[in-house]
Image 1 (cartoon, rainbow, N blue to C red):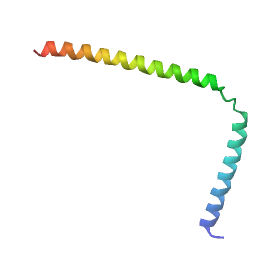
Image 2 (image 1 turned 60 degrees about the vertical axis):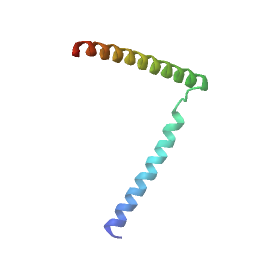
Image 3 (image 1 turned 180 degrees about the vertical axis):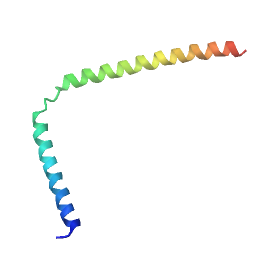
Image 4 (image 1 turned 120 degrees about the vertical axis):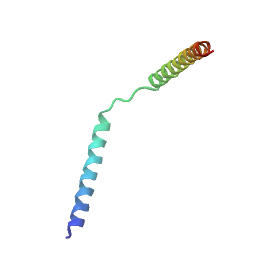
Length: 71
């Protein structure tokens, strides 16, 4: 067997072992319920809008202030 073939077989073996271990670990995961996901998503959306409005307001204030300073 050539060195390339041995290396390929080793890579394939470690990949298969990795996938098996991933499957075992995924069985241990406690996945969130649908209502928890919806609640978390709502919090993220509301927080994103709040930050966007805050940054927009700060940008507007700074724009007006720089406009007054430059004139």
